Length: 241
Ligand code: FPP
Image (cartoon, rainbow, N blue to C red; front, side):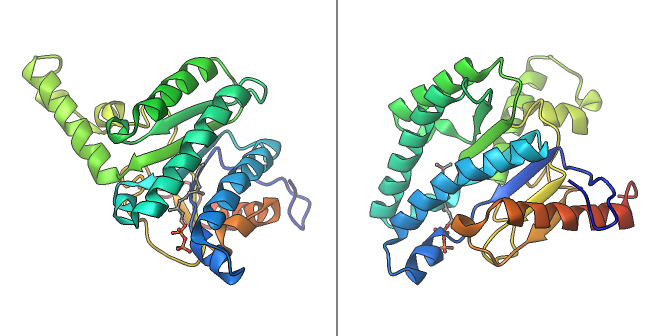
């Protein structure tokens, strides 16, 4: 990808996305909210393809937060049905697309068949070397950090490390994102400018891009705009913080 001076763009290695605005998108079309979610999940596939073509290596998306259980029961069950089908579809397609697909979040609260699909997906896509897609389901960053601390405290109790040796790097090893690079760019669609408990630890140095475009309308062109913005920020502040 080139800019107007024909210089090469820096492509972020890892892009995190808060997929927002499915409900409003559907409302604008006089359709039920769940139709927006269906279109939103279809759009994720298109954006992953675009990201892969642009050379992005990691995409991490917020699909269902720990807060989303508070939505009306009918919407929660429609979202779960969508996720269930999406994950089963991923199991079939991951190898064909050479995609490594992971799920982060507290998966123990999910139905058994969804947990099985998550496990199977992890297993079948383990060796794939293409795009890394990470889907956050029943995810909340505070919950992730508490789970990490519990595991670390247990290990400390069992003398697996000395407390004074515990540092940022070791904490990262207990997080769901263990082994992944931190996001370079975080995109939130639909005009909201909040983190909503997404990757609070991992986004410490990430550039943020907010757009009014609703998630089902966010396409390759919009992704390129976000990358252009990222390049402007990088040039201005590159390397400082
Ligand atoms: C925000 O839109 C979106 C969600 C709560 C869920 C995101 C889920 C999907 C895109 C579909 C399932 C995902 C996968 C990976 C299969 P909103 O409902 O908050 O929209 P609104 O703010 O306009 O009401």
